[in-house]
Every structure is written in C-alpha cells, then in structure tokens.
Length: 196
Image (cartoon, rainbow, N blue to C red; front, side, top):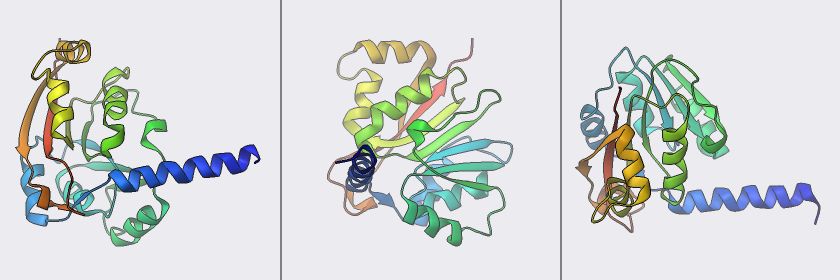
C-alpha cells in the first residue's frame, strides 16, 4: 500500500473514531441555558471545537463578537456552512483542531462539545499554548472532568492545572440530552484562567 493510500486510510479511521465518540446536544433551550452560564458577551472572540450540526454554533453566534468554529468532518462542515450562511460573525474552518493554530495574541474564550476520545489532547493543547484562552467551557465525560479537578485524588496533571486554572463543574447533563443517547455521564467543565 502506498504512503498516500495509508494516509487516506488513517484519516478515514480518524473520522470514524470521531463520529463514534460524538454525541450532539440539539435542544435549543438546553444550549441557551448552558451558554447563559458562561461570561461570553458581544465583545468576545470565541473558538468552538467541532461545529457538528451547528446547533451550539448558532447559539454562540448570538452571544459573541466573532466565532471561529473548527470541524474535521467535511459533510458536517458543508452542511453548517449552508445552514448558518446568514451568521456574518461566524468563521467556519474545515480541519483538525489538533493542528489548528491558536491565536498568538489577544484574549479569546473557548466553548465546545468536544469529541470525548481526544479530551486530554484537546485540554493539553489549550492549556500549554503560549497564549491560552481566558476561559473555557468544555462538555466532557464526567470521569475526565473529575480527573482534571484532582478528584477523588490529585494527580500530577491536576496539580499542574491548578497553578494556572480554577476548575468547576457548572452543569450536569442527562444522558438523554444527547443524540444519539450518550453511553456515559457528561458535564460542562469551566476552566477560568488565573491571571497573575
């Protein structure tokens, strides 16, 4: 098999993993409820990881100055590009967030329902960059959130996070909130950057 074909197969497998680990929040009322729990306002630049079907994207657009939303699945990207063409403050980016260049300067925030199987890689990317977000709200598996918080016991990574961030679970989801039905318990974890 050629390197090119191996690359295509690897990318296809990657997309399948994402699809298998992605559960969408579709209730407008719930999405508005959780976005209202954030500090996002009309002066903020926001990054969303995983545009998905655009449900959360649309709610975020109404709240912020500019929204940059990254989606690795081409079909979802094209679907949302048509669906939300009227949102003039939305910048849809087709690509892999793990390869996305985060802003090198200026303040920004992150709000996302992330693919659970790469939760740790996403959190590491956002927290070790030279210009981390001021705040983040990430929908993730409850067990992962507790590990980041050092519960029930501290670990090296949770201790390192606490030097830079205040972490708090601000919403507990029901499994039925997701489509398809979630197989694990999920929460909205707030990361508030500690400025010295």
